[in-house]
Image (tube, protein in one colour):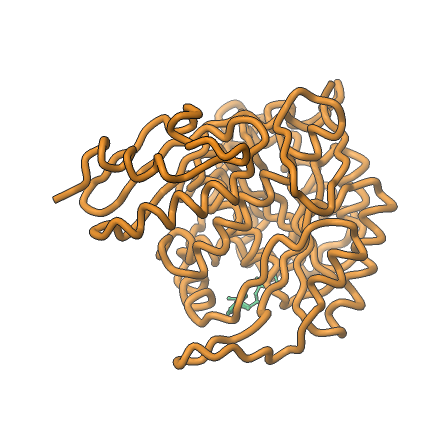
Length: 366
Ligand code: ADP
């Protein structure tokens, strides 16, 4: 028997917000419904609350009811948008998130893709721009090929998969490996076109999967469009962190706020549940401290991440209730919290969250 909405609301009454008031009494629960063990909840964030904190308590409470095997939270909120100049190529895009790394192979594209899908699951309108034009991996990770079409000969319609709008240089080349032989200006030209000519429409978040390192792509990008900020992906060992410090410095030089750091391949859980820190530890926190930004999460090495990526369905889409997918979802909630906090710091009337660390000042619309 599925739980009635009343039973779900009664359970949610035990969850309190930052002020200690039940989220039901505070009017934050807009909807709760159980369809065969899949509970869908729509929440408002209210004032002074963190999505990550309330989200995890709501999931925990509902999963503990028994007979519930999945909880999907949709946030119904309005995070103030980035500053949009008169000549902005994507005025309908509220937030641009740049996903960067110091070097290749750390899981940047995996993080960008799963983070995008996590934001979508949380109820936001999202797009993913594969700006890793030297090695586009989004077509493989999202199992999508084909050519974007133009209806008017001027604009390009993005492809769409799992509810996410997508654009990748991989869609335009016969052989995506071809991109490697393109010269810098051609690539940055293509990227400019992806921003200007692709019909992104109205999105809450457009995630850019940037090439690794401190290339000219980020530079030309920052001259063309004002992003909300960057998420830096690193592995825990020092070798990886050396490069990543350079990319953080570059972001800071370009006045791109670092919104947070994701440490990937942090540890491996063996079948007995023991944690092995194969690549050492502390790298993610060190980068976060250096950037003055929060460590958004630490992701383990999990073979399902690679397996699902190879099959063309990222783990957040394929197995949303798996521990690793839940970690991506928590990272997405923390990221939105950080953006909302940054907007508040710039004086916009928005979420006032206490207890946050590593506050980020963002250039927001006035
Ligand atoms: P990058 O974009 O930094 O070059 P990718 O995202 O392409 O890195 O990841 C490199 C490889 O590592 C891919 O095969 C991917 O599936 C795998 N991978 C990434 N993160 C994890 C993880 N947490 N656990 C297991 N495999 C991972």
